[in-house]
Every structure is written in structure tokens, then in C-alpha cells.
Image 1: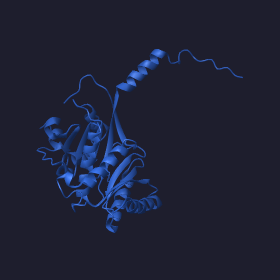
Image 2: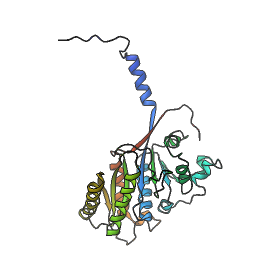
Image 3: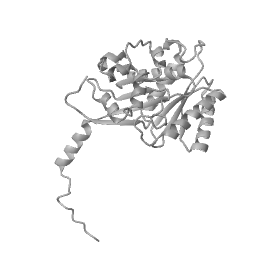
Image 4: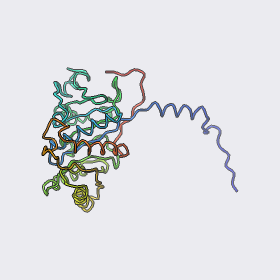
Length: 284
């Protein structure tokens, strides 16, 4: 039997371990959930809004960054300024962020996010800024329109292998085509392979919704070798109101219940993350 004698100069002492644990606990993480376009901006925006609201209701500190503007209607938000005003120094963060509910802030980004992407400035440092606010966020929901990077690929945040991107897809043939096209575009432009969850909108039952998702997943697997999984479904509204077509979310309780489930399950999803060290003083 060979006996290995540890090198005392490389051994970790209890004091070193305690320091390492303190350093670990001082690090904060921002979980990032992109909602990608798949043919129905109104439904996508409403889903992003309801998901953000439910995440905040569950105790998360959420910022909804809305590139399309469609999430504003579902939240009843009327933003006065865009993220661009913050970028250009005309407003502080509190001037562009609307407090929608406890734990939820909304930021319009139709001009600001494309400007950052065009300048190749929508990377880790941008996301770290949300961790360094006076009220740091721990979750960022991105309602995206499919802006391209200067290199021509679809922009995705903080690329992490197998991190989840959410799509909201309808049940028609054109909806399936749009969802597959969105997955293909995201896959083609990604530095590392992304993964996808699909929320099916308008299916009459879970069985029908899973069948629609299976068609999308099979095409993505066969032609792209990409992982696509089922996220849930929003059934047709008893009131006849379509998802994203009414500002009153209470008029569509079926959608609210569906997004509550997605919010709960997303806690276990592998999302893109941005890390930052804790700071004793944080800017506004």
C-alpha cells in the first residue's frame, strides 16, 4: 500500500475553508430567462408579463426587460422612458423602471436593448448592473424580439451550455413553423448550444398541447440535435379572450393558473446566470 504524505503548503486549513465559504455566500446570482419570439408577439408578451408577476409573487426580485413592448399591456404599464434614457445618462435606473407589484419592476427596452446589442455591450457587465442596484434583482425576464448581433446571429444573454430559453407557440401549422424557425435561428447564432422549453397557447387539453410540443421537439431533434421540452399549456379562455388581447389578466384566469405552474417549475430549470460579488455600497 502506498502512503501519500500531504504537502503542508497546499493543505486547506479550517480558516481557509471558512474564508472560502464566506466568499461563496457573498456572491450573488442573477437568473436570466429569455422569452423568444415564435410568431405571436401579443401572446409572448402576455406570457412574459404573467410569468414575471408570478415569480415576484413567489418571493423573487424580478425585473422584466421588455424589448417588444407587448408585456406592458398585460401589466397595465405605461412607461415614460426607455432603457436608452439610462444608457445615455438622461435618467437613473429608478427613472426608467416602473414598480408594478412587490418584487416586480418593468423596464421598456425597445430602443435601449438593440442599441446595446449593436454596440456589443449587452454582455456580462450589463447584467452585473442589475445585481449592483440599490435593490438588486435576482431574476431577469427578457421579452425579446429576435435582435441580431453585429455578427449576424440571434442575440441570447450570457451564453451557458443547455441554459433554457422559453417559447410561446400556438397550435396551428404556421405556429409550429414559426416555433421551429425561432429555435433554428437561436441555435445557429449561439456560441454554445441552448435548450428550449415550449409553452403551448390555445390547446384544448394537456394531451393536445403535448402532442403539438412533440412535433416541434421531433423536428428540432432530427434536424438540429437540439433539446426541446414541454413547459405547459394555456387553454382557450372560457370568456373568449385570447392571451395577450386583454389588459385585464383577471379576465383570463386560465392563463394565470398556467403561468403560476410555469413559474413554480422554472425554479428547477437550468437558466443562464450572471454572478457578482456582494458589495457594501451599491449604486442606484
